[in-house]
Length: 282
Image 1 (cartoon, helix red, strand yellow):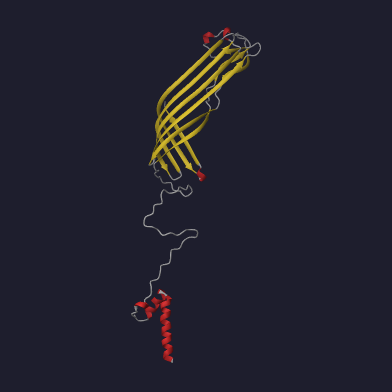
Image 2 (image 1 turned 90 degrees about the vertical axis):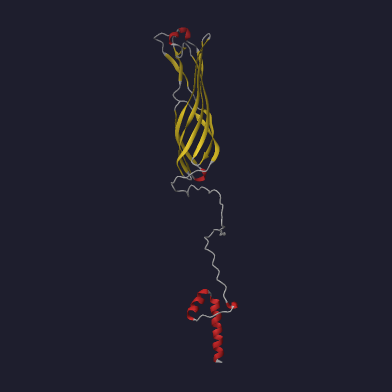
């Protein structure tokens, strides 16, 4: 009976070692002599546990080659100041302009209470043609490769100013735009109206190269050429019994080199802040 109990205990011990796994099997192997086991008694190799996965992340098997495409740029994640190359690209842009020419006001007449006598005194406001704010536009396109690009830009602007002045009782309007030798009482008027136009067209072709850039900022220099066309037209009609017209037409066409700096910085929500400074020698 005692020997039967020992045989049952030995069978339980062997079965417990087989169920315990590799850790217990190694401990038992140190204390027990080597034993040749039957093929049916051999243990299957233990499976390697899957790697730990952070919460909220979907674990997927890593293929041998993965093509993830271009990375998504995140301005907050890019904190390095190292210069990076830009991918080749092309595109266009358009700007709305609202401009006013300054320092070009044209005074063309004044109201006085006499003819050309030294005792004549001013009796009213000066007749002045002043340009006002007017709309314009700028359009362009670019083609870029690596950290360089070619930029073409065209700018259009037209402005017009109209001024009318009438002399009051016992007053006349003296012209300030006639030739000095032609001043006489017959040149004085009772009313005057004027038109003042300032127009320009600009065409720029620039080579732009990056000084330094990152995933959400860039600083570039530009060198190129500019063509400019400028029209400045003034016309004044002085009315008494007839009409005296004074007209001036100024035309300018020129071209010359152009240099500048351009910088931009990306922000949250797709916001882009940029600044440009340039000088053209025509």
